[in-house]
Image 1 (cartoon, rainbow, N blue to C red):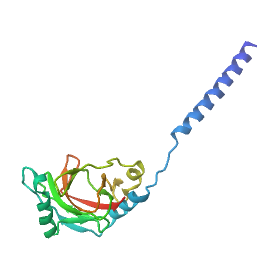
Image 2 (image 1 turned 90 degrees about the vertical axis):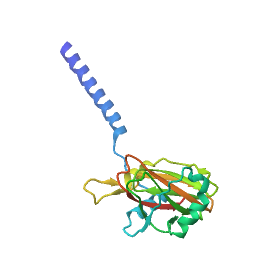
Image 3 (image 1 turned 30 degrees about the vertical axis):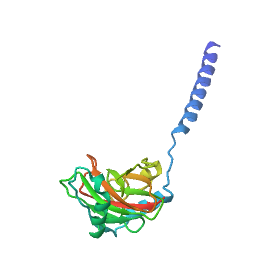
Image 4 (image 1 turned 45 degrees about the horizontal axis):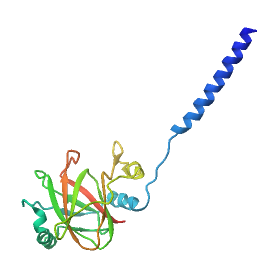
Length: 193
């Protein structure tokens, strides 16, 4: 009788434990993420094999902010500028320099800069004021779904994403390479937000 009772208890515990395990496993089921909206457009642009080459400029001024308007004019004259949604750009920098510059001519109120490499970025108004990004986070869907599937190991196409409120004007962009940049050239797409 004790043996029957022990067997019933063992069966009840086994069934209970199995139910608990099945219920907890539902938390760890795989999920799929799909890139959407402006991030999908940025991904599409960075996937494009047609691009415009921009040989970015280096400036040795102590305080670039004091002469932003003049620098933008020089860069615009030399065709060292980018515009939103016009093209994908290949930004070529001097390998020996950490910082590089190009002009940004905006006609939109809000844009997102998508870079194929990990970089830091500063955006200067013509008066020298630095515009702070409104968002620097990378949505999970963008990181998970925007990858180069042709590479040996799937590689993210977007490594830096910066969102700015930019009322139509001209800006100076300073791109600062960091330890993760890994190259002296990288792709850039700018999309209306």
